[in-house]
Image (cartoon, rainbow, N blue to C red; front, side):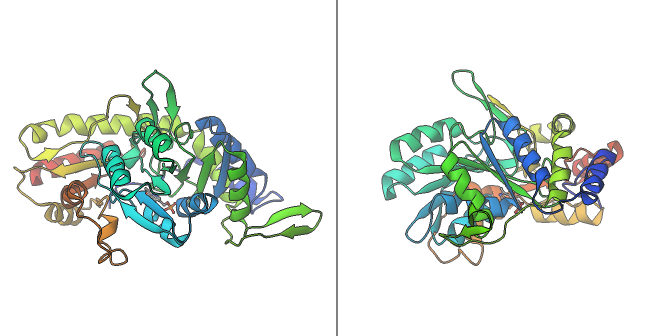
Length: 377
Ligand SMILES: Cc1ncc(COP(=O)(O)O)c(C=O)c1O
């Protein structure tokens, strides 16, 4: 099977993990600290706090903002469930607004309308969909006006950046326009630790609280003594995972190049299908320099197949595509609570399919995918 995403592990990655296995620390220790420093220096955010997954990172971020009963968190329906679930897990209420058709990111206009209609939420969680930065600069203006927090879900977007209106280049995760950001290091993401995540922030108080919440809420008070003013779970990352993360981070630029190369090749190979209205292809928005996480096509109105038929036929030929995403508000947990409709997200969800995009995708596998798409669509 050719998957839609896959890790790329080389001998340096393996060596880094083995060396750590032979060292004194295997759970959270010096490698986690080193990984955190490397993430800070990549993004420019002052503090990076590693944890066991992107989901844990989102939960830690909202807990550190004191999201709880009575709070509302606003996010996009076209995302992985964790972007919304973190709010509910912390005891708050998730809310959604629609997305922009072109970037598939949260619509800043819709956030503004929500604030005007219902009052500001406590936190907004934009998702840098497929690696494309959300419009954080415009969201920041609303943040200043309405006073909500912003947590950037950059699970797809380590290595991506955007340019502000006055020409400043900002890395996703930098927290220039946000209070916090999170990354995921799941194997299909731009770099991997096998499992892992990180929260980034420039605020020392929030960084301290996240570090405590990462370990049961515990604060060290000197010697063997500790206290916990609030409770949490164990969300530590191990040094074994961090060693892999450090090694992968050194390869991020080459991963980004390869992903962009494949992105452009897909666009070239499939451009005739777009002209004929059989497919709609993704584009890189002006002012962004994404590390492309997904190549998401939309089925056009002149296609011979619908999305589900294409998924099934490709699968039968050994190509395992994926739907990113079935909208979160349509899952059983959220259904019946009066959300939506979100016309853009729901339309995209019915027509989208993510094609294989990862640094190790071979030429022959790439050609197999485009040949099948040209025959089937
Ligand atoms: C947008 C988004 N947010 C959060 C997560 C959660 O990350 P993890 O799988 O590391 O828990 C994912 C991962 O699938 C994701 O795609």
